[in-house]
Amino acid sequence: MATTRRVLERVPEAQFGWKPHEKSFSLGDLAGHLSNIPYWCTMTLKDTSLDLATLDRAKSPTSLAELLTGFDARVTTAREHLSRATDPEFFVPWTLKMGDQEFFTMPRISVLRTFVMNHSIHHRGQLTVYLRLNNVPLPPVYGPTADEQQ
Image (cartoon, rainbow, N blue to C red; front, side, top):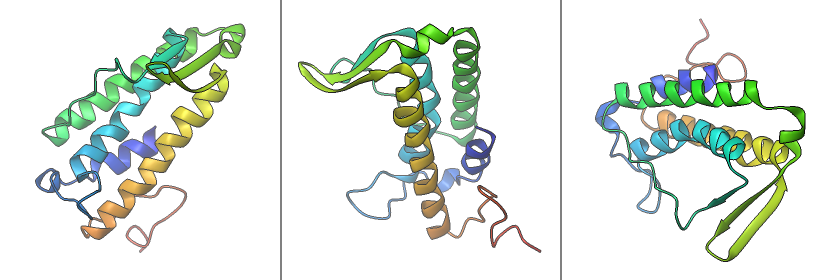
């Protein structure tokens, strides 16, 4: 989460509306989506399913401060839920659906790994491409970047 926060910190507020393509997320929407993913950890641990048809969609942030404050709060809450979870709770089946259409059911531990963590990593990588296209220096993610090396 610290790495993700470092990437989010680089998002230029003045460029929130920028899109690399008309079909793409805007920079602000992508950053907002990434900052909301820790909440998915909380949802996964609190419930046994998520119905996308009834999900209240997170609003896009209007400022960098709002983006970071929201991310920090969601990470704190997710960590609290993780710390209280017992081993058996991680193996409870969890389902993602939209109305009557079921996309998958798997143990919570698998959902946390694939649906939450891998999804976060995917969008963090996508966000670094957006930042690069806007000439924003990238922070280290898996090691030094060309922008951070001296």
